[in-house]
Figure 1: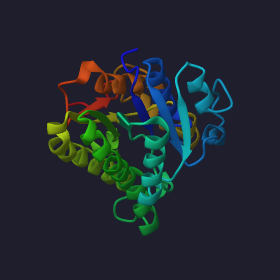
Figure 2 (figure 1 turned 180 degrees about the vertical axis):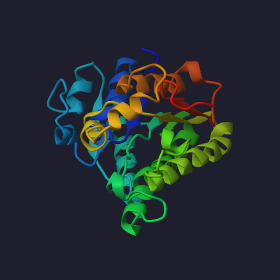
Figure 3 (figure 1 turned 60 degrees about the vertical axis):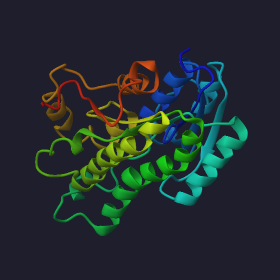
Figure 4 (figure 1 turned 30 degrees about the horizontal axis):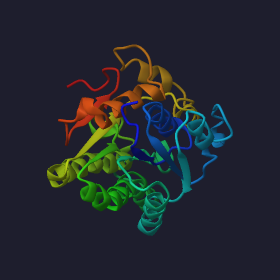
Length: 265
């Protein structure tokens, strides 16, 4: 119960990796705010969960849980969300920026030809949403002189994908790493750490449908992983636990690759 008395906001948490983050933080004792565009988002890709919503799953673990539908790409909605959390739960101690993902089709994601619509959508989903959420919690965390922020990048930001697709997504995720490092420098004197996780191939219901179902993709990805298996969401959440508990007290401005050895440096 290392996080008992803390409040954690997890974006994009109505399923997938975000759900795993929320459940792990709750088991550590934190009260949890579940944010997503749709609090029933897990249904879209046929994900099986242990209740009617992730909010209910978290409450079953004996902590407080608030569900907030908001688009993190819109600064005004983020501001209202944070105000509601402060009003109802009193404080925000931990921010996990998990919301994101590829916008558009993989086959249309090349650097030289990605459409303006997809490019802007990738920047909004993966970079601007992260920035808006960090900005919204910065002052409350500074006033309490403690906070933990974990952003989400991707292996695509650390090494180029064979063939050159995922380019716009990778550019946005690379921006997340740079933003993390700068924010860590700014907020460190207030007792706030800012770090970043960089997952590789994770077996979520969403990726099973839009990526791993493509011919040969599963075999291609598995061949790149020395540990011989794709990650499950909880593998990624263990990295989050490190950054937000006392284990990571002296770590800030870092990007942790959670990839089974796929990133070779």
